[in-house]
Amino acid sequence: MILPHAAVQTPVFMPVGTQATVKAVPQHLLEELGAQIILGNTYHLYLRPGHEVIRRLGGLHRFMSWPRAMLTDSGGFQVFSLSDLRKVTEEGVQFRSHLNGSSHFFSPEHSIDVQIALGADIIMAFDECTEYPADYARVRQSLDITLRWAQRSKDHFAAHRDERPWPAHFAGQTQSLFGIVQGGMFTDLRRESAERLVEMDFPGYAIGGLSVGEPRALTREMIEATLPYLPEDKPRYVMGVGYPEEIVEYAAMGVDMMDCVLPTRAARHGLLFTSEGRLNIKNRRFAEDQGPLDPECCCMVCARYSRAYLRHIFVTQELLAAVLNTLHNLAFYLDTMESVRDAIQLGVLPALLARVRARNNGGATGQP
Image (cartoon, rainbow, N blue to C red):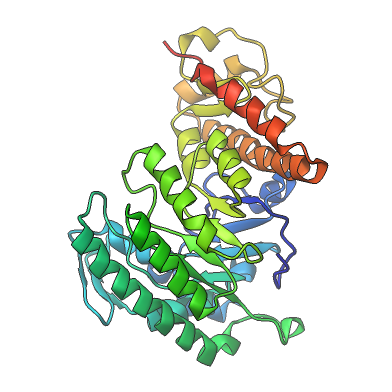
């Protein structure tokens, strides 16, 4: 993908930087890890520090000192998560801030205005994320609204795309607006959503409404059911997935972009991803283990620190534990996706997929 701030090789994993920061990791280390593109969260940045503040400060890239590509979500998923604090109408969503209870309103047009002000390379159409479980009638109604909102998002972006806060040398370049496929866990609605979005002719398409409590097998089923109806020559993005072995599977299915909070969130709870499976660093068996966290990993953490030390700083609640754990997990995810890109170029993706499947048959390691 050739984006204004950077060229991005796909398939790509995108670390999540909710509040204009990937938790516990400074930007220069993200660059060292090889992150090509990271996410910002429209809902949270709208509340704090405010999108107009960020616009006046030169946009999100300049505000957070990130020179590479960025993507912002529409805010739809976060508003969805405020189930007791929101009201959805045809016009948009009235909701109360989770911070102080103040009242706010997001329409497709307002979501696009906020994202234009933030200035990410890729922005998302405003959508309603359907809860799980939900019956067919509920999902049908939600999908109809989301499709109308998609067209409104596209129309508003076309009229205001030149208002992004980029420096003069980006003249003539613009943000890319992606549509989001919804449809709950119903394959016919997923197909309809994809086909109608393709008719609107977005430059890229996301598959949303997953990782909302459904079984992981159902997540895969919905992705498989949707991908054939999205153009192969435009980016295909699955939002909010998954474990390392899953992102390999999805990339092999033809997904170009993925993001997930799992590597950073799990790291803060002591769950680490390794070539030997998932590892709980709190486990007593690591108290005197002088070996690296992952003997096959070349990241800055595995090259320097022992399992015993990582366990010690975690159980003593040192802040450094979150930093080092997160660095390793992100490195593992980013290196995993790099290995997929290499395998595609070399024509050996089936062999890589077979190794990943065999490796993960044993499940997690480091159990009490």
